[in-house]
Image (cartoon, rainbow, N blue to C red; front, top):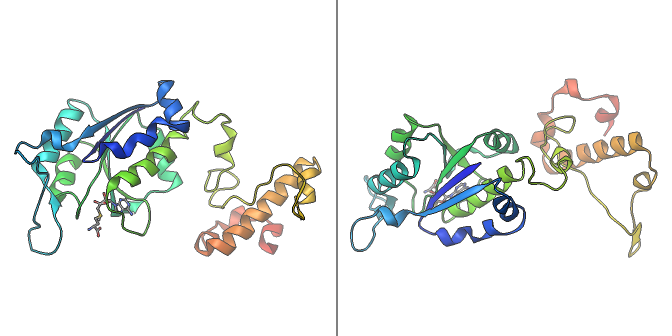
Length: 244
Ligand code: SAM
């Protein structure tokens, strides 16, 4: 998968050299190209922002600079373009899965009050453009949001996770645990500072372990994300689920 990122702070993306994503790059699974937006600004100060029409505080990123940058990075190609913004639709595991199936993604990192809206309109006519929010809070810029998305998408690519089943058991993963949070996890030793690992996990009984995991996932979802629990499809719940 090819990933292009345009930002005024390319140095934010140093973490993409390490851990799972860094290894995926080394192995050629991910081809990440980070671009400095200011390279397409022509004045001596390399200006990328201006005052907002209609007044108000803050600055808005200029469409001309973005236009030149995107035109050059995209060329004749057609990546899916992602614009992180708190006013976008939520970036969820489902969206991560959808994006993981794309061959090429282009991320446009806003700063200040964001990017002039005409940029999204212009490229929306030529590319698929998604404005995505990573949560209901406001960051200083799109860079951290892009790191979040790249990690969530990258770990779903074939060959990135050491054990492909890790993603299958994750919170929000599709399948039997869809829309459930993952329950608690344990490793050795069986007792630590008086806290014992639940006996069922030591039983070796796969059916009982699976049932316990589902019970715990349901319990955690009800406690931490009642809106997700309320939205579960009743047809996917058995009698025991309802008791939990
Ligand atoms: N004025 C904007 C608003 O209220 O919607 C906030 C702009 S924010 C200070 C600057 C940039 O940070 C945004 O253009 C976007 O790229 C990024 N950003 C901030 N919060 C974000 C979030 N929750 N999800 C994705 N991107 C975010």
